[in-house]
Image (tube, rainbow, N blue to C red; front, side, top):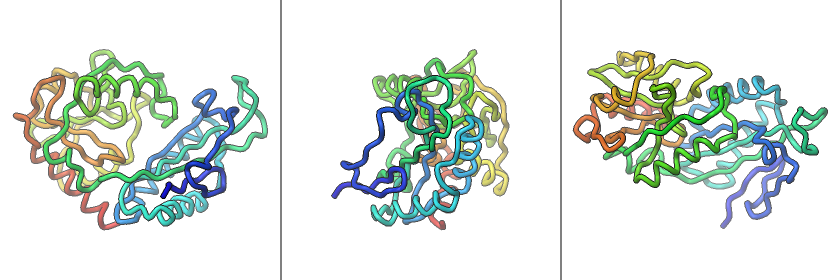
Length: 281
């Protein structure tokens, strides 16, 4: 049975889903996206994703394709129609369909598509042993705070990681780690989590925001500052966060074992806290 996906107001089998070749997302990567986790048939951190979507659309002067309540209804309907117990809902908004021109077209309706993906989020096998990552130059544009569909540079970094037998790449700019190709980056020294402060240089991850809140509630210190790959090599622990991986331990960076190659107590605690909240709904 094929997935049911959403295309501009209609729920259709994935093989019947079509968008125009003149869609500006296809021609210019003129669009934004969000990925919402689903656990126990329920959307996780949905409000944070809508808040970030609103900001992305505003930054690009892009119109909403529907009302906020309609967007939630669409997400929930995809969960029901696909019997999605656990996984993600990917949604994408573009500026719409118009003849190819660099300036923004007038009176063009934004396009909205969305689809589900089944994933193991709670019992992710990688979380037991941790993952390997590599570092790579950050080749992206200057507005990484906007969650755009312009992802060629992260794709290059991710492919480099896979070719080296790693699961993710941390991007490096001016000698400092910015973030992962599809995640936020953290190291731990003692009991303190260290991560880059929010700016235009990185995306303010929804899982990152939840992690900050949980850390404060449970007395875990977070220090927001830049750090180098060399500092990461010497860290007691390291981890990443994302909507599809939650809190994921890292046990090797550029071939160097972190924390003796074992999942550390701070990362384990933060993952457990996040899973508890996600499963409660």
